[in-house]
Image 1 (cartoon, rainbow, N blue to C red):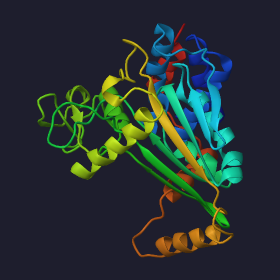
Image 2: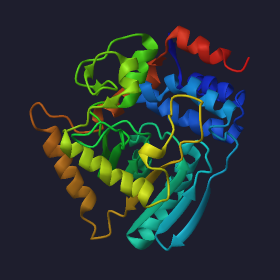
Image 3: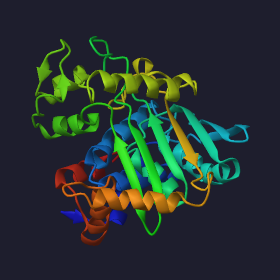
Image 4: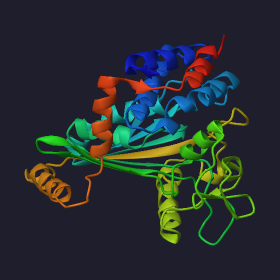
Length: 330
């Protein structure tokens, strides 16, 4: 059954409000999960609601937390998410970064004591919508081992980039450093579906098509050894730099057991006019070159087209999933 974005937002907000979460935080989380659904990333959308609510009820996530930002340098903001949801902390950073970047040329926000940040392309897309280049690095609970090893030290650790383009929608690049996002495996486990071989390894390091075995094992990195090298970079930027937990120190995003995950996110904003007035036109030239290449697709365009279509036609929602969310807290 198709539902409007507003209906889905209300569904999520009601479940969170019944699960020890403030109205402000529930709305911020719902904004992010609706954005995930609109981009076709259901593993970061409605399928996260049950886990989020369970964690808020258990105290693994503080649903009433208020993030606090401290400007430690003219172009740096240290954000304490206070073991709450990541989205209010990301909102704070995204609100602060554009003006700071225009003032300094470049600005950075580091978030600690945070949680799952959803679709990484969403906050950088918001930055590009405000006229600045955005980069986001996020770490997550241990799910990938260093190349050649078996202990999961790194998360799947997404990287995202967005650039405004003259007279066009932004370019948005959003990649997980595992071969696929772990949310896809979670969604397969919820549906009772097998996963393709090559996505993950079981706890013994063997390829598996069982999503539950995959969740207990490790993810296959994007680009093999290169993916784990990039994951090391992300862990240092998101946890070593900010004081957040490394992936191997963080508890799961998927259950309500244990202490808060305490992961980190680092966002960077760059004023495209920092080196002169030419950047947006040059970005447009490259975007046109990519889009004009036979067989190529400009990153971000598929999700932007999907968002426009789903806003018009409604978002398909599994009836059983919706019923389960409606029942939360009752």
